[in-house]
Image 1 (cartoon, rainbow, N blue to C red):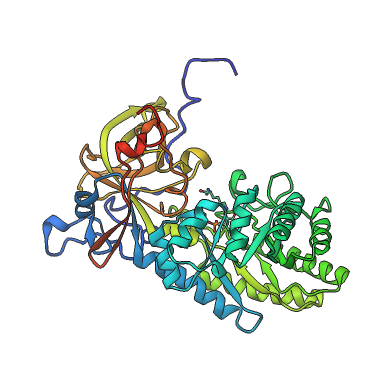
Image 2: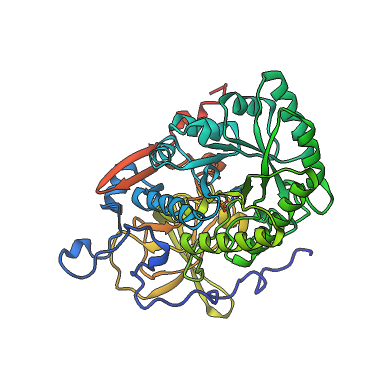
Length: 478
Ligand code: LLP
């Protein structure tokens, strides 16, 4: 399209259908806030009224200790979600061959968080040498680590095998030979799984749907690569084939997608077992369980997910005439996402009047697409609340934007905020625990925020704010 005068084409309309004008613009909409987050009501201390608290600290106390922007993790929320997934999968699959939860480190990992997971007995999946290093330093034992990745280096694979990780999930035919070559050289006999793409269109953003045919992950069942992969693994005596794996995508609400995946994976397992006269003891079903970012989302909880998967897997395996394998699932977002909020300080506030006289309030914060790229990258929806005070002003449709040099630098596309929101106010955005810090950048030479955990009134800095020296640490002319 050639350039034209900007006009109604650029105005994106008013609020989206899911966003209702709130009765009380100060209220927290509970499904999307961490377990310990609340705003004290009218009663008692007037100064505390409407001020967001999490982990027993007010946002003002957090900002005073570490400044803004800051990623704040509610430790109680994170650990209870991790434990709930582990316990519900253990319960739901107990009468079958069992199931294990491997936390997907890519969603959020620090050495301190790996320490929580180690203490709480969770296993972990990593997909790079860097993630491997972090979880090892946090005390996760190699036997509790699955090594993933779509283009693993010799160095990463050799390190994983030398450590004796529980499992290597192989992503391509070439990688089978790569693992076999390294295993022979090192004298290792690694247990492996083959990641398969099984032709499922999970209803999520195109960039995070991973099991349809036209994408880079895994061995396609449709083009015969998956079965060829099995034959090739079996030709290498050092490789011990434990089973097949799939991950159909991320932020999936539709339980039908998981049913389809289970059905195809049971069929494929049966086909491999018959063709090669063997038993595959393990089935990897990946992660991808959706979380509510806004009140427009209503996902199932861990108990419902686990029961659904167990029941369906049992039926499908029975229909195929095979034993039910042990199952692994790899939730990341569903554990880390809702446990985290990002705290910002408001700067410039700019009402912009669009065609038809409709005004959108642009509220700038001291971070942006460098600490949360998801809105720009996937068009993700988020919510926000004025966190540092109670407001009696009416709700005003607002857009929370960052301090980066592009108009796509949006943190929250649409939210009702009090019309008197002003510079110096603290603003909190929930459900930023997953894929915000892990995808953060230094765009515009902005220094990355700290990650703090809060619990029972205590704040722990897990990762400190980047300093100017950090920013320049790799610049050899600095
Ligand atoms: N297992 C495998 C093999 C994966 O590739 C992933 C995510 C997971 C488990 C965990 O998925 P989860 O439970 O967190 O949905 N950056 C995107 C998400 C990319 C997910 C990549 N793989 C986002 O911000 O939405």
